[in-house]
Image (cartoon, rainbow, N blue to C red; front, side, top):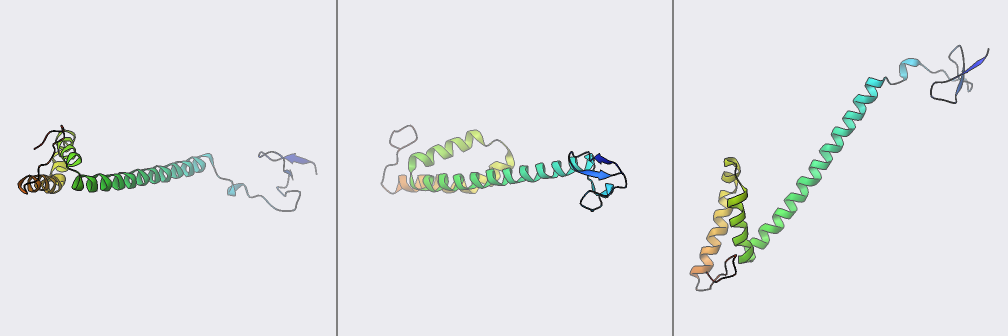
Length: 126
């Protein structure tokens, strides 16, 4: 029998469907375009999830670092309190941050009543 080219380019098979090396290729094993698209979409979804997880982890680490700095540095603490008041607009987010901001504000007040003077974000003494 005469050999013909496989669609994938290069492998010769006989008209009977038997490859030159003697193996059979079942046409049902080839993935359809729809299957290939679905697999690519699933891979993209996994990559997007991975990217979001990475970004969320970075935000958590950075937030923890900023919070630790705010607890130790009055200038950073004043800036965090001020920025949170401006940047956080959703009520649900305000409620979530309220205990934390109250803690930072109390730290500010404690320092001021300790007899130590705390600098404000503008650089002046409180």
